[in-house]
Length: 287
Image 1 (cartoon, rainbow, N blue to C red):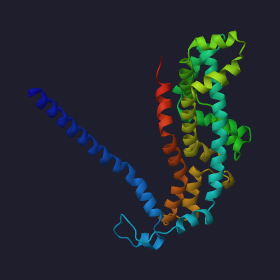
Image 2 (image 1 turned 180 degrees about the horizontal axis):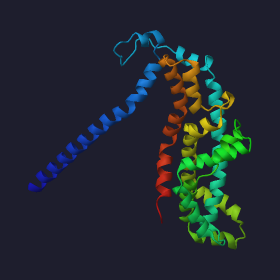
Image 3 (image 1 turned 30 degrees about the vertical axis):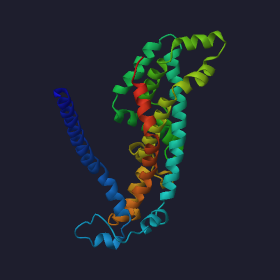
């Protein structure tokens, strides 16, 4: 009898504890999501309705899509989105090729100075990003690649961190598979594409998605290397929209442009969030 009471008491305490935790998580979730709600709400308010609100309202009875129409007709938002898409796809594709080959070389191949080279690679992560940007800017300028897609893309086609992450994941694949493949006469490249990549697919997908997000949100480098509007990405294009497009006072139209720019990344993350978590956990686990 006493055992049953203790069991029920423990179960009740666990339910209360879980209820309190979920309550605070729900409150925290509301705080996190509120800026997105406010952004979308403002984007469907007309300019006159927004300016007439002396006290901001948390809803609207007369939503309008005119701000979204203006975002594509008044300014060059479509061009900025296209430029960003081209930059993101090409940069991500080239980077995935480079880091996959580099990670495979460090994880499976044997060559003189491998450990020293890998240590120097990791040491590059200690260099402040501002110094790398200065060097890249001078190099791209000297090559006359400013205001070109090549100038935007080339400095971003590799990443020491992603090489390290992928190398650790490749190292988890048993050596016996590699030696068995070599006995069968399989080349290193065939082993990479037929064995390593399928096994490590979650990490590769994660790295690809993270790189897409990084490229889409890139601001400092595109801002430095482009001053021609024909090559603006959404990150620095939104500043051009604010300064010379809708103007600083047309907040609803600006919010509509921001919603359009943010939506692809939000959808991408929601679709692949499980793979992102799986890939990061696999890349950080040894054994």
